[in-house]
Image (cartoon, rainbow, N blue to C red; front, side, top):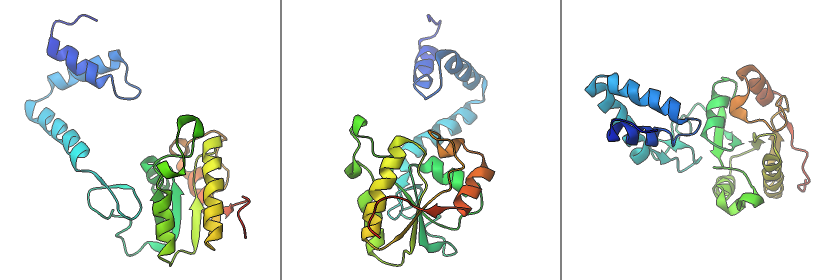
Length: 205
């Protein structure tokens, strides 16, 4: 695509690097930004810059946060004896939108996938076991996607948590096999959290 402006071409190239954004969509976005007020575009670019430079990971749950401890972990009203283990921030948002879960979270940052070179040590599993070792946790909910990788990760964690004497449950499978949590409607996801079942792994009991 030959453009009359090198600056426009560069903007389109960068926007097209975003997931799900092709060059046609990137072109529409770039032209929209070009039509906007300069101050509005400055606020937009500043928000993106601060997102990249200032967002940190919560030292307790590994969720993204603006502070060393995220708002969820810092909320005294949350049930600290209950931890819901999820793959990433999108799953936290999906579960929070159900308004049916009042415990804490632990974000793994992915799932075990040997084919992709991702093992337990590449995830925040040690941080999870560190929280368990501190005491006070009675139950861990495994809320990972219904995929082979999600099930492999759940199996691994069940064995580790069972050895530590922790009650392990999993969300009810009202979710399609192979599906991701952030694609599930809020009613189904909320019911899955409420109707969670004991994890049927092979961890020692």
